[in-house]
Length: 267
Image (cartoon, rainbow, N blue to C red; front, side, top):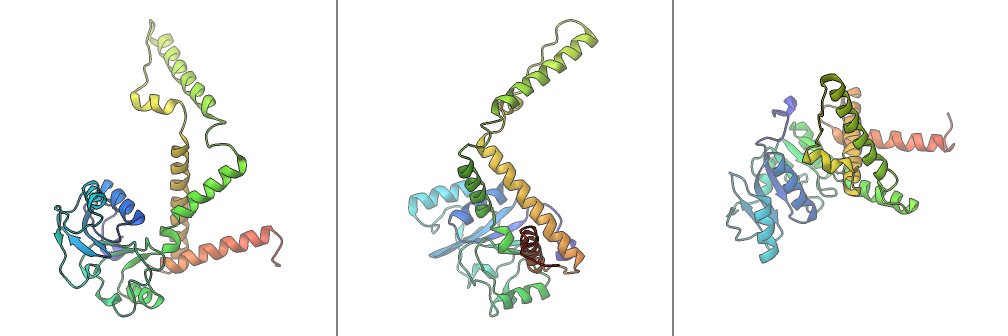
């Protein structure tokens, strides 16, 4: 993060999002939840701006009622040339492709450009952003969460068994045995009856993870592992901020490994 002049973490990072559809809305929710300030949102019919930040829930409710972000009382209508050119820490194109191109890449004023849409940055623009020391998180990684969960769904359909069904009772019983073991140990050490009462949060988890919990956990692990691998390849190959090339290296390695395992390659 020092290479782009930012401190680690999301706290107080300013964010501009292009697109308020499914991707843009959830991006706004999660970034706001982790401490970011959403200062601008751009849609096809207009844009809004508030340097102090906007509340995702309020904007979502307004959009549902009015079918537009225009007129939202929590922000002012943006009257500048293009919201994408305004200064911010994180710029999230979450609408359509080729939004950042050779003709406007030099006008972007973010530190991080996160490609939530498919192909929002052209090849020429990617080179310009890299020369300007702007970290571009490639779409091939950043918006892979949807297809990852679709893969989980495919595995579930193949097995014809919902996630957690085979281990639910075992995990619940194991947690009760754990509490009972702790209680018996304390009673042997201190004497008398020492009941162990689980907290509300632990009690909710005692019955094991729900299907939603398992999917979220698997997604978190997959994305985190992919990010670490991508950053490791970038460092090994002295790519600097070029995470796009690093992601391509990771993808080609995986394809080669699969082909080798299947016996379709020759040493």
